[in-house]
Amino acid sequence: MEELSSITVSQREQFLVENDVFGIYNYFDAGDIATQKFMVEIQRDKQLDYLMRGLRQLAPSFSSLDANRPWLCYWILHSIALLGESVDDELENNVIDFLGRCQGSEGGYGGGPGQLPHLATSYAAVNTLVTVGGDKALSSINRMHDMGEMDVRACYTAISIASILNILDDELTRGLGDYIVSCQTYEGGIGGEPGSEAHGGYTYCGLATMNLINEVDRLDLDTLMNWAVHRQGVEMGFQGRTNKLVDGCYTFWQAAPCVLLQRLYSTHDLEGVVTESIIHPPTLIGECNRFLIASVCRDMYSCALRLVFCTSILGVLICFGDNHQIPDGGFRDKPRKARDFYHTCYCLSGLSVAQHAWSKDEGTPPLTRDILGSYSNLLEPVHLLHNIVMDRYNEANEFFYRAA
Ligand SMILES: CC(C)=CCC/C(C)=C/CC/C(C)=C/COP(=O)(O)OP(=O)(O)O
Ligand SMILES: [Zn+2]
Image 1: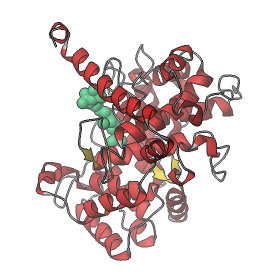
Image 2 (image 1 turned 180 degrees about the vertical axis):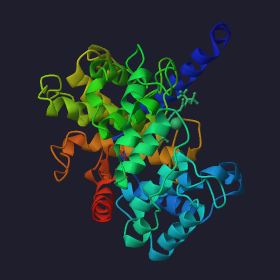
Image 3 (image 1 turned 180 degrees about the horizontal axis):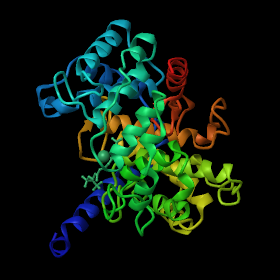
């Protein structure tokens, strides 16, 4: 402890996280096959139980999230959809009715009934209604809109909503590409505003937006990719920004950009950059020095990419949602933190992205080697630009195409 007193707060926190995480990996490595299998198994029943209970009733401590109620609907319903399940008609109707009461008279959704509409809660509400699916949910959305804020998350939520609802036009996209390009930093990632530090959350938002408005080639994609793959630390999880702690939710915010870029490189015929890698999830389990592998591969996209995906799956399953420490389902930020619906949503989303990263097309299921643990861990694929389960997105796409 004497040694610890001479280091900074951040170094101390990093040290403690590494200690926790390596303790879990050592426990995993020392375990027999049955223990290891159990630790990497997504316990669907327990996850669903946690999510369903949250959808019906929340504890009084959730009152601090009163301005985020559409987000709670999205985190929970999207997690349920990722697990390949849906809710009964009564709950669906309650969700549609509740979100209807959050909708402003001039369009947009507030954080709760009577609250001012906000782009972020509008994004959560639209994604929830698309996830619920069906004419009643989709036709409950009033497609009028009103712009307000100015940062990369606001750009993304507005464009994501407009794209899904089929109301994207030149007026909405004018100057947007210039703004996002101006938010890409010297590190390669994207910050929330010009001059701000690159961060995984905004990098996802910026890259997804540039894809949606067909201007992605204007970003420096090589430095972006380089920045994103280097956000994975020795703990195997991802950090949101340089020198910060890993956190389970960045498994989505950082891995989705990696997959988006990988697909972009493939369609631009730059397959040499992303070639088949020799490292597969089973090779990593119980194997000697995974950290050595990480450092050897640091500058090779091919290895780095597959490594990113398989180690992040391992990390997420045993550190952010491990069965021996969160026996009742749910995922969390990091060891010692409590589970919550936000981290459950984004850990599961990141797992899905990683599982489906190597599928050739939408209809082709992933190979067994790309699913860590049993194949029953397979999650539904998501639309990378909206983080909505693919078949729900396709239904909404057709619906709003007809409604145009
Ligand atoms: C569509 C949508 C919801 C987008 C949100 C994207 C997102 C997650 C943005 C992150 C914002 C941010 C700077 C967090 C830093 O928090 P921190 O300092 O507590 O965390 P850190 O140490 O991990 O950076
Ligand atoms: Zn987080």
